[in-house]
Length: 298
Image (tube, rainbow, N blue to C red; front, side, top):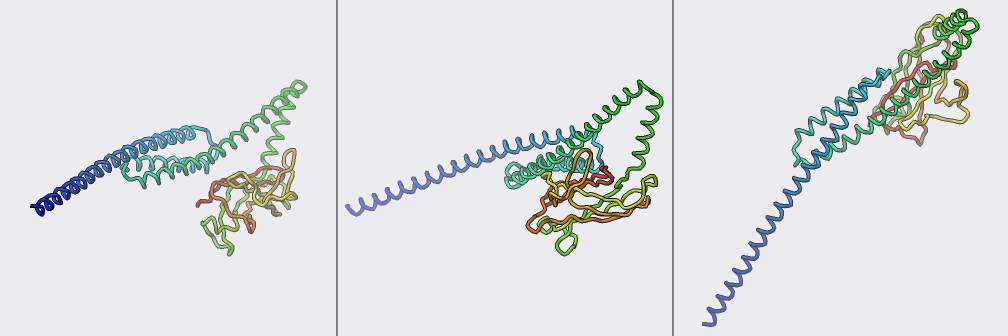
């Protein structure tokens, strides 16, 4: 009789333990499902927020496309990035919210495109500032001409137009520039960390009205942060009412015919090329004769 009581007690105890285990598993399973559902809901929210950010960025690109950007290279780059945003937005719409990895990657892509847009905005603002300065200078010239016109309007206008025509006609112009990035062996490379030198193949247009002879060609290379490459205190030249620095200088013999040349901008031994958008400006005879943007990618 005592033995059977013991067996019954063990059986009851095992049953209780089993019920507790089963109950625990059921509770854990329900908790996991609830947690999973909450995660899915959170991912849905994050996806919707990310989609709204992409849509806002697309609207920003539309706004900049409507501006009068007087730079074909910058306009093309802007159009390319705008299409990239549209493609990423479409991919995001088709990506399931449960694909957390791709959602995270698309979020990083958004940050990259925003950085690129900020660089474009900086360049557009720079162009607008230059245009505003030129417009202000033109306005000042117009006012001066008005004062002089009071004494001899017809003669002053004729002389002013003739002077402007001769000045513009005799100004040199860099009509094309192709940058190439080189490694320490002077071989072309697109890997930013391997770049030790930037090569610029340029063409100066034909101009028979420009006085022939030896010309000093000054080149300024600005990095994505707006810093002048190879800047040194003694490397300056006269421009407008002051002096500005240059990255490199060449002496060329100009005959009036089209001239093709090449120049190099080397990086310091401890300097690594930054990724982003650069600008190379050419100056000769006290004039800015060419400006070209280019990009070094990761």
